[in-house]
Image 1 (cartoon, rainbow, N blue to C red):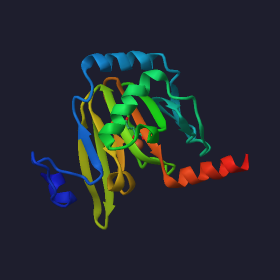
Image 2: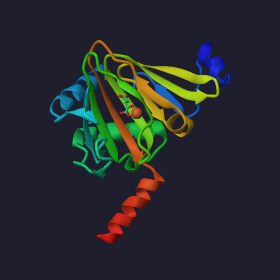
Image 3: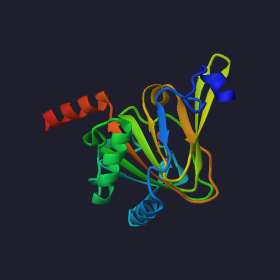
Length: 206
Ligand SMILES: O=C(O)CCC(=O)C(=O)O
Ligand SMILES: [Fe+2]
């Protein structure tokens, strides 16, 4: 109830509070698909997330495009592996996007004790579509108000999918509290108009 009051009183058919630009669905994957994806991720060269000498317990690998948090470099990365193809198609369909828009995939493993602090995704990206595997988590969102923060929490069940766009993506920060068992996520992203222009200009030069 608190969230409903705080974000302006919108609720869906089931009385669940709504945050504009945030959508999610449970049972997006079967348990077998979840297990297969986790097995594929075991073969991915994940590296610890690093930012200004701070190493998180979070391990990641980018496909398609990568953003280096240490030097701000945005660059082409390894192409997406084939095992992500059908997932990308389905994720795009869920988000109402064309699969060709989802040019980045970030594969993340959160070991026990790992989470992700408050942030907004980098401005080179636009849509964020995330799939959760393993331990359930809570995606926390917040937005500053004159007197404090509006807050919105979304349960990320294993095998569920969410889409961050518009207001939820641009105006709200999000984070995930540390979990006590392993969670994996696969997040697909599209590029922002600004990033597309930047790439076009770079490619004209070369
Ligand atoms: O693990 C997730 O579902 C989301 C993580 C996240 O916010 C990010 O990688 O930007
Ligand atoms: Fe994020």
